[in-house]
Image: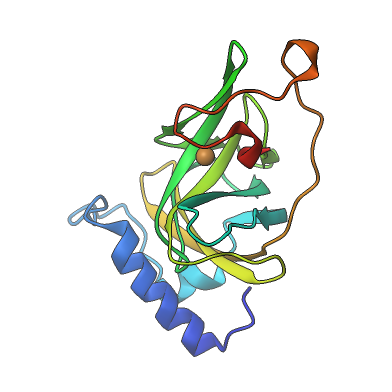
Length: 197
Ligand SMILES: [Cu+2]
């Protein structure tokens, strides 16, 4: 959890929930079989997913977006359906793919988190990552960035979980190279493929 006082953390989380949850979630009024809904405070104290090895790629001044990477292990079958951060105006779930020699990334609506199975959000083709968009400033190596993960349980209920990750240049994983060992060309979203490695 972040090195914030609990009260500060909860207040910030509440604001973030209000900003990012939108109107997508409507309480299921009248379903008597539904157990009492936990309070928002309880949500914040419950780690729905274990987050390991997380990092956010540094971003220079003027850079609009950057990637966040981590291994998520959920304690129940659920979907990761969104991400937000105080450091960015928006957040998306992205999938990278190689189209010929071109590395592309595109938004996806959700990422499956099977119970107990680690899901790696990592650079490279056929992998997902979190994309912070509309960065509010540069992200320097060594600073901490808080992300709020939006999770959808099998029941449809929406939960959020905060995680604070370091900004650093992560390890370069084994990756496919184009013919001749050349890095892939610029991606479809105007970002050089190298920026997402
Ligand atoms: Cu991306």
